[in-house]
Image 1 (cartoon, rainbow, N blue to C red):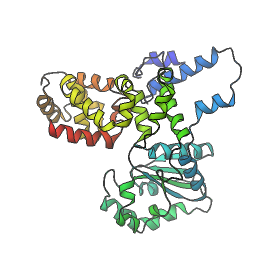
Image 2: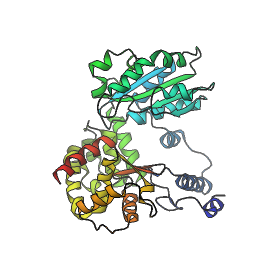
Image 3: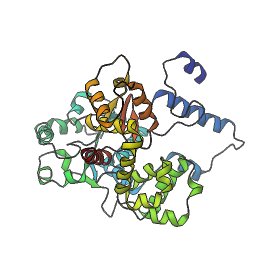
Image 4: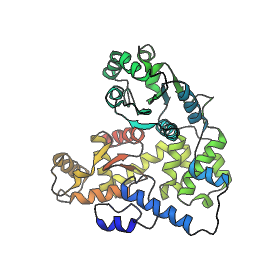
Length: 367
């Protein structure tokens, strides 16, 4: 069946080809088929006829105290807001909780804004996900005022009496601590869970599990000493993000201890080197900043003149040939999946928007 679908056309080749597990950030349909094929082959060709509970749990679940608390609260209440500083897994937490609700018959509905809930509400059981509900970097007065204006209508949408509607939102901690938000007349500030609070912060064992899952995914678990794991797990800054970044990049893995101790310094050094040695990738990252953290792949099509002025002006500024085919920029972006970029449908996005965007804003201004 997979062979037939491949040969019918219309599917992009996965990041690692058709015969290996695709990169975790490759979410296109071809990658999904390649994943199914690989796992099917693993199960079909094994001599074992069963799987012990520990192996099953390690493959299919990743539950920490934070997500368990959010899930328990969300079972009782209709609207939960999850907050923390950047890189600590707010989005991953609400997605994980949403999957638990899906197993109980809920439909997962990602929406751009809180009032989209009114538009997409149906008679089915639904859990709505809203990332950065009141702004990514700063509190948006406009968004908050609209929330207050529509608060009664949104609340009535949730008040079904059967608990069939849930809202899971994320908000960065500096916004959640804003007095204007705390005093607002909105459902959003009624139940706020801070992932950095001591009751929900990652324990040492949980950090080790997260780190090892990332290393196992890239077959690096045998190349690291237990003493190194201890040192890396002492880090509190954006720990889940650092695990992903260090396991997806060979150079970072070589400098793993330094990277966990001084991630900002090392990332700045990478950008310094990149601006001279890999101008195509540097150009892509700066373009991502200019387009608010996201690049449409259609920008690189030969027949498209979408944003050409910005692209060619930036290429010239960075030191690339103006007549260089845009396709070469797309190839460079594909090579950076997992280390700097991820794919969301047909868009390239920063692997972590706030961290890389702030670094690049600073770096390009100096450049």
